[in-house]
Length: 132
Image 1 (tube, rainbow, N blue to C red):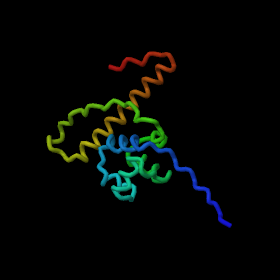
Image 2: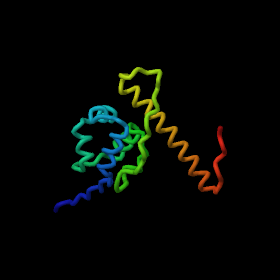
Image 3: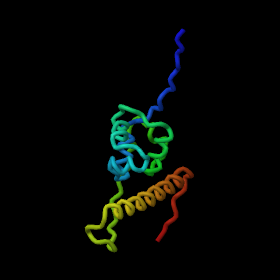
Image 4: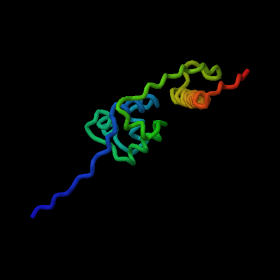
């Protein structure tokens, strides 16, 4: 008598969105792998759709990439405009990429907050206040 073991369905994470999120966070495969204690080959296999991360691993990726977890279920990467990095005249031209990445992250967060506030005013049918 053979026992049939039902396999758990795998979460439908989109590899293209995983790759987009990693690239948007300016992380290499090695850096992403270190953040979730996996190998770069694992990250690459997830992005190519050969394998699927567990829900826990995907949540770790979402935190490392600074993206919402549910974004990984989208059919295609979201169309989010890339902010232009405001020049930081306190840093020299050849500043470390980690400093530039952090500055871009802060600027992206601020721009998202601004867009959310404008959407809120639009939803309420009001005009945003004039700010000098």
